[in-house]
Length: 372
Image 1 (cartoon, one colour):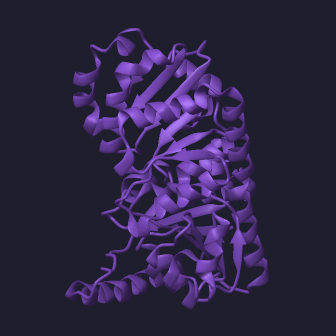
Image 2 (image 1 turned 90 degrees about the vertical axis):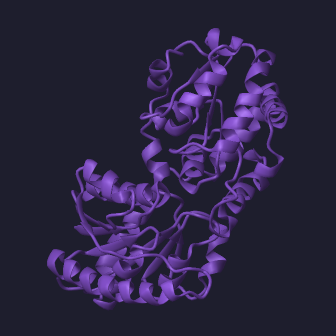
């Protein structure tokens, strides 16, 4: 089976696509081609994973009337033409888009060529590109059931979950603890703000750090992000919690799934892939949605968990060290509550998400007589 993957701009679009591709390779030895842009993170991430990469040039639409949108339409049409050339050459059995403006011309071109197509929406509130593509593709796969109402014009929707959840099930908690030198730790709280870090979370953690003696025996793993690391260390290296080994600060975690699996509680943003991983592992969370995302979709993601009893939410405008500490203590110091929250998270988890999507691709392949 040959599959074209497309989606980009952020890891939230790239990693679900890669997870789908890896699952297809594992099941049937699928061949993969990833089509992205040279400006997006995918141009750096995907080739390092050993997946063939090709690029089309496209930019996103502005939400307000703008001359730039006219230029974007021209780029879109050029992108469609190049995508058609790549698709005719590669002759895929299916094309999968995971969001980001680059998947617009690629998935649209595939649909017009009669190739089976599927898009995956990670967030509760879909992005513009997926909303546009929904009327053309064969299947829309969603991570949250609440998303289905946004795709009323779709031919078919499938509640699949986020494929990143499947990847994280291979994580090793023991290796995660060992990598941090915490093999004997009973409780680990992981605090991070995404691959680049988040200033608001970092500031709240720095304000909370002098009070960590209120939680003896709890180890905090703080990942401020590489760009914030040096300044963070200047503010933290003399604190008792850091000097005693209760607080561990690292700029980046290359084995994030393993450390996630070892954690008792996670403090983080409300990105869809992170939520998928935590729920698959049944880990309680304190979610701090980024207010700087399209349609405020992270808050909608977080509310979905909170309403299910799977975590807590602190809005960034309400966030400070005291509130964060109080919320951490509320969960960690009440073992039955922590366990109940983790169980609620696990009930939301969909560890077979990538399998579900690949099964749908196989169904499309069999039901559609696309000839290479």
